[in-house]
Image 1 (cartoon, rainbow, N blue to C red):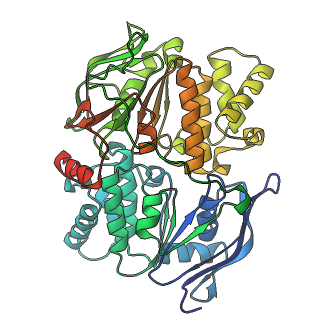
Image 2: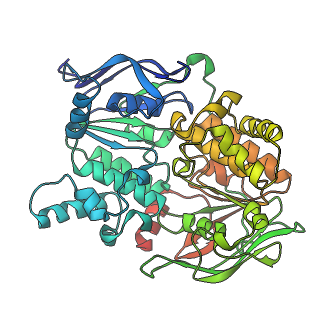
Length: 486
């Protein structure tokens, strides 16, 4: 056993409510200095495996069988597991921003477990941030001032800084551009000691890092990976959506968005979203892509500029919009775990807009909610579950079903495929294609070439402005652009 510090045997997870198996008996062996990648379709239990191993399963799930051994000694659930987790492990989950104290600065978060003088700790924090491409000025910011990709890297920096024996990573690059993903690879490779257990759908991450791969997808349900599109769609530099005679759904005029300290994120952004169009926005992590969606959705009111819905002014603050306006513009965020009420069952979450916005009777909205879940690839039995009993990809699809229940005119998507395996992502993109064929206007923020391949136009955030993309991105392009963006 000494050659394999971590040995997992027969680890099994079940739901308490109905006894259904979430993770079938699973064996893993993680050698010293090894990177083991765990892959598989969305919902096969990858994240549950990590939580069961760490004894951090959410309420409603239970480790029904199996053992975890560390250097030959069993790690029982409860206090021993907490002690082992605290002293030996570093963990970065799928929704890292939710695990970071919103009141602490980045420097305090990353340096929490470090020893030495204050100057030594600060220097080490700066070194880890630099390793992941995070500028030094981020050290004084709080989580709410970070982009999704920056928060993801801060969580990773926090785990790396403590130099754990075992590093557990759950989709650590889901919110990152290609160049920044390369930095993550280099940072994990640079670990002097310790092993890494990686859960991911990212083929690049697997090929660049993994010494071995374990696929949790049952053999009978495995399907070939779809072929990604080679192009990035038809480009329209002025953001007109390539719509021709299509009706103009939403117009953005001269939008300016700043950070809390007044530094610009977006400057003089102009954009037209027409009926049935699909516009994709790309750019390095931290360039303002999510802020653009939040400004349009009214969650982060712009400092200046105008939004027009169907030619009429749309209030910048969602709280000032009327019911029709809130219905018309729907956002599916990057981290749906933070947007779905943990107390509400999935069926109720999807049915609520049907009741509040459209006045459907109970029987009709239950039927409609079931249909929407089916549309996004979730069986009817998911309606009875709560968000903490879902995988990251399943929560992402629930959030989309809930947005569609509002029957919007404009759908804003933030990294819509980030938590999905390739087959599930392909199905989701086909659904979005059908929706826009019915007239829905789509604006998606993405790092995924499969998403940009579906778009009518691909725009890029560069120097705080929205411009026409000049072609497919490369690692070098993104690293150079990110360096310039600092």
